[in-house]
Amino acid sequence: MKKVVLSFAAVLALTTAANAQLIDEKDVTVTMDLQPVLQLDMTTSNQIEFVFDEINEYYAGITQYAATILKVSSTVSWDLYAVGRSNGTNGPEFWDQQIDYGNNNPNAIPDLPLSLLELRQSQPNGGAAAASGTFRDYNQAFSPSATPSAGNSLYVNGGALTPPSTDDKYIAGHAGTSGTAGDDFIAGGSYLTQNTNFSDYYYAIDYRILPGLPAIFPMAADADGATFEDIVTVNGAGAYAEPGVYTMYVQYVLLEDQ
Image 1: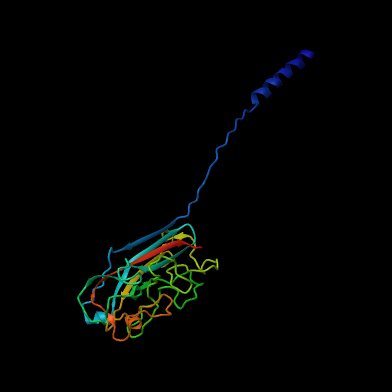
Image 2: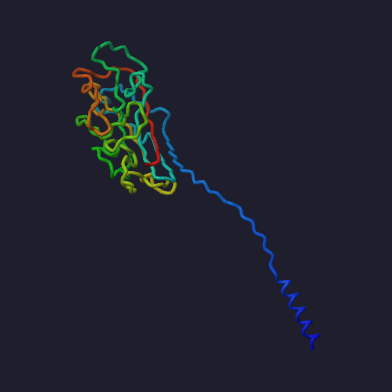
């Protein structure tokens, strides 16, 4: 009887040893760095030209339709604005005069305001509810020559890139601290996922210049529309734009909303 019991205990011990599990554990740390991404894709000509050599072009202006396409992708909330700039040869808020056609009339003014360039964006600003100015974006139709309007005049800030205030125009988003999407910013997203050309992430930009007769650029105004900057308003009756070749550039700025 004792022999049987000892044999059973030995078998049980061997079975337990055979089923024992050995474990060796080591850890690896995984780090994830989510860098904010702001990406502005722009399709446009290297140079957009306006050549005024017909009387009707002075009176009706010239419009370049969909001359610039802007497409946005972002992982963070964002704002988008345009600002007029030059090299400052005539001053930081004026076009650079490249060629002077030799007009010696003292009423001929070579200092043409950058704000005479008008923009029109293809759809309204979806994040401008916090705007307090008369014009919150560039979506309104171009005004006829007989009705001067600041609705599309380009934002200019003394040659600086400083963002517009709540009174000035943005393309998307706006200045402000309301903190709610649709009030003062556009939420992160991409034109790649919208499947439409009419979204907060895709804009076709038209440009217009309307000199008028005489060439005083009646639509030139500061971005909130409070002050007109046409040649006569700034320089007095009888003043007009000096004939010549002028250049400037538009800078589009995409920035994280603060």
